[in-house]
Length: 97
Image (cartoon, rainbow, N blue to C red; front, side):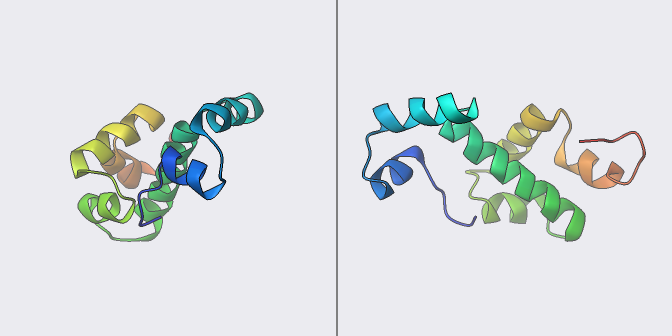
């Protein structure tokens, strides 16, 4: 996930227009392609937070977030908690993400 994949990239790779591709994806999966990409990045971030000692900056860079603060903001929007809280409390019984 080290490169920043966009809707434009996907449309180009599939030789499809964004106007056709995004609505079709949303009909099928109930989320937009951009939402899917963000969710996939956050799922990968969760794995990295659990299985590595990488810093938030390193994870944000690895997952092509523009800044570490944007990574933290996005992580919190999707999960409801910060990456640090997730990492510190992953094994607590109360945390079920």
